[in-house]
Image (tube, rainbow, N blue to C red; front, side, top):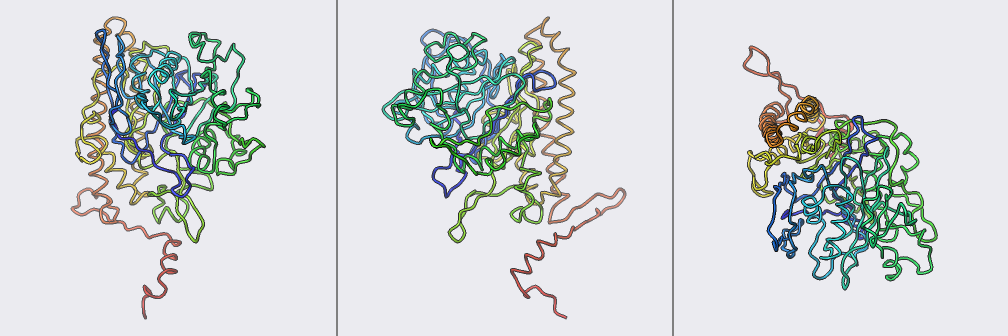
Length: 564
């Protein structure tokens, strides 16, 4: 909370394009090698400062009130009653191994915001993490909060996971003159993965009253047979507003197609990230490539008919290191690979500066919006492990800046402190300090953007060496920590807190030294290598690619020609 988190538009020239900022990939127990559940999150904003939040567990006296501040802007929204007991929260994970992430899809603009609403989507996440112990309880808490205090944001997709279950919930407010929100929550079947990236994805859903219940029966949410929960008026409200025909069948109702119809921007800048992930874990996604590129087929109701499924079954199980790499995609291996067109420049840089949309001779064009992007404030892989005590089982693999060049380090969710170099208040978006991880990582990454095909491979090698080392150490640490916790819970929590904080701060120091090495090596367009026993390094000056040189000649004519 109290963070500026302004979304950027995918297409500046297309008014209906959704804000494109964040990416979530969701993994059930049956899709991972070790049986953990996982969710990824990239918090992408040009003004979001990457830092690691922390709320300590606490007990509150009767009558206590909680101030709510909008996460995007820091605006004071109002007060709500404080819970009697709140839980320890590190980033987007709490001490009970509950993790919540999000992506904003916007949806129908007339439903964004309502007078007097207190709960924005960011506050909804962090307040719920302090109050709920598992995913089902979180859904009940979140929907109760917006019903009581109003919903102040636009359409939002939430990922909600615990050590046993993985859920996706999509919500949109009721607009001016109304209070609260309409929503649908679905449990991802075990053995399947799900994803969302700034486009609502829940379409039709069951209404059988057994596996699927409405919010007036929310007390049944803990019945394991229930796998779908929805606001009781989610369809009636759409009919009332004219979003869905009054005489249409309820069983044909699609949440996304009604409240957030997919358009070109929703496919090309949002769903394409889901496609890239699905394609990485299942080789049968070519049939959806045209849709991901923005070619939408529709039925008589206007519903898109060639959409990707909400979840898919992967063709293999993955580990946490692979999950980290799913967040580093630039559409490599496709015709839209961002390193392969002239916009990448002579150094094959898979990034484009904003604006993402532009117009030439009256025709509109786009730059691709991939999973890895330069404006990421922070990202993480939350991992929940049910075979370990909660204090040991919950790990937030956390990183700042661009996911393609960050390093995810293990932050145990039981930790009572966060690393000093990642802590709130250590620098800000307009306050540079080399003592803050966000700025240290940005120094390395922004240097890499200038000579990407030369510098990034060195970053990649160091990144993977560190992450592999961390993963191996955590595996070794697990059994000992679990045994220690049985004998000395408080001592174990302090031990894991120290490990997490020391690892994070050492990473920042290591990356700061890494920047110095890279700057010396690549300064002034050279590639320098130290020669043992000699004062001066070996200097290489690689030639520019021929296509780039030909482009210069085509634009300059004879101006640069050598005269005989």
